[in-house]
Length: 170
Image (cartoon, rainbow, N blue to C red; front, side, top):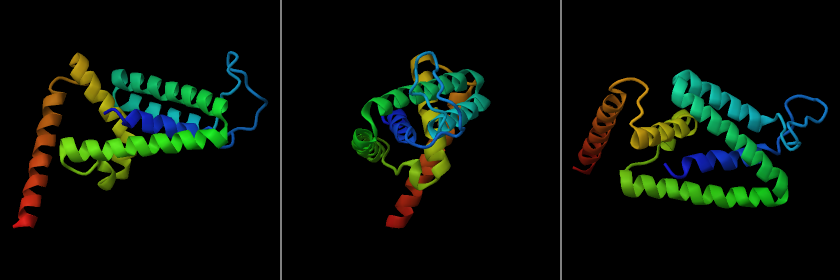
C-alpha cells in the first residue's frame, strides 16, 4: 500500500518532460506557469475519470489524488529539470518497486499482479490500495457487503493458488 502512489507520482515526473498535447500560448494557471497540458495531465485525467466511473465517492477522492500528483510532479520536475529529475525518478522507482516485491513476497507470499495482469497492476493498483486504506481507516464500502465479498474472493484465490503450488511440489 505504501509504494503504489509514489510509483505513479514519480512516473508523472517523467511525463512532465513530454511535449504539450495542444499548441497554445503559455498558460499561466493562477501563477503556476509550470503546468503543461501534456501526457502527465492526460494520464491524471484518464485515471481520475476511470476511478470516478468505478465509484463516485472514492473515485472522486482518487481523481483528486491523481490531479494532486500531476500538480506536485509538475512542480518537482520543473524545479529539478530533466538532468536531475530522471535520477530522482530512477532512485524512487527502484526503491518503490523493491518495496513492492519485498512486500508481496514477505507479507503476501505471492507475486505482484504485475506478473498476472498489467492493466490490473498499473491501472487498478492505485485505486485498490486507496479503497483498502479507506476501508481500514473509515470502514468505507462502495456498497453494503462489498468488503466481505471481495475478501471472500481474495481468500478463495489465495487458497487455490496455494493448492496449485502444493500440487506442483508433490
